[in-house]
Length: 385
Image (cartoon, rainbow, N blue to C red; front, side, top):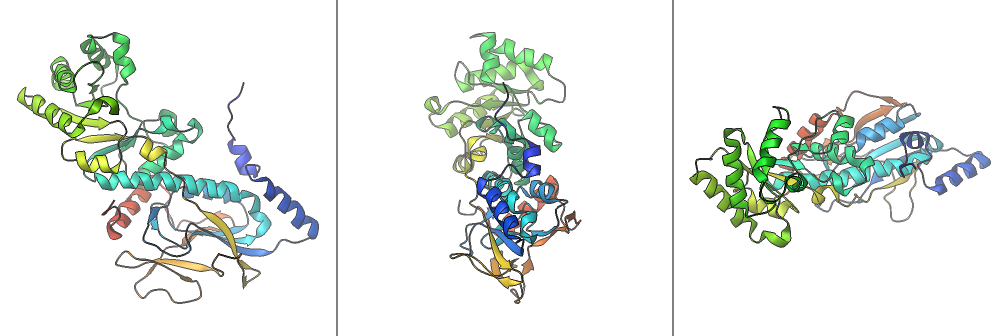
């Protein structure tokens, strides 16, 4: 048996598409029509103050590279709010069948990145890791982890996803490891972990498997001594009670027994609200479903110019547009042939010219994360979230 996975060849060849694009190609070729068009990818026509974070651009660049098209895009890691995030110009049949994949690349990654930015901004001084790959199809794990890093998260858990994006995954231990050693043998499990894993792996002991978090945390600290980096509290919600109180009690107990250097790492069903509540008592967080299960951004691709003339379907703004960021963090949309805001920075930058990648945009993770941090500050993203 094989996995139900659409492979990279199908995406590159254009068969990862909706059937009506096949029929559109057949019809246009039959009619001898292949007009030059400008198409824009947008989520909202006008700004409404609800910013989202752009991701997925690298995959679109890989898909359209070598096609005879010009592409402009907002650099990945920047916030957007209305108007186009990407503009494609060329003969329509050069990119028609790729619309489905283009939208999928941008929509899903941007949704994940936006959710990751929510938690990043909720605890800006804390260590925050992406733990959500288990909630999604394994074929998209690398997208999840890359999008989390673009938003500024500090690390992730998925091994193969890390290999794809060129970063090393990290992690602690599951409850299953403790259970395999049996009830009452938690010390044996923590010590075996300490002896087995490499010296570069932080010693983080999971401390809520069988007994009270305070009890297990102290036992882990006594068992591993100064080799213990942190304890992780991953208590299920049905047994958690007041998580903030539990963390404070664990901190108090560790300090009272001279384990002030042992950190506390919290995980299990956390989102921005929980991180805001706990960021002053926990040293770090693992966030899973809030990031990985984020709703995709509802992008659409629409023709806005046909053979040099404005053209758009009902309900869409006709004509080629530009978008701008002003010094106060505002987002503005205007026609390309008109003047933008006096202090406006034009956000759409060249990505491809005649199918060749241009060097104006750094598509790397670190560069995108720097842009996300700067834009979030500039736009006051997350201030009321």
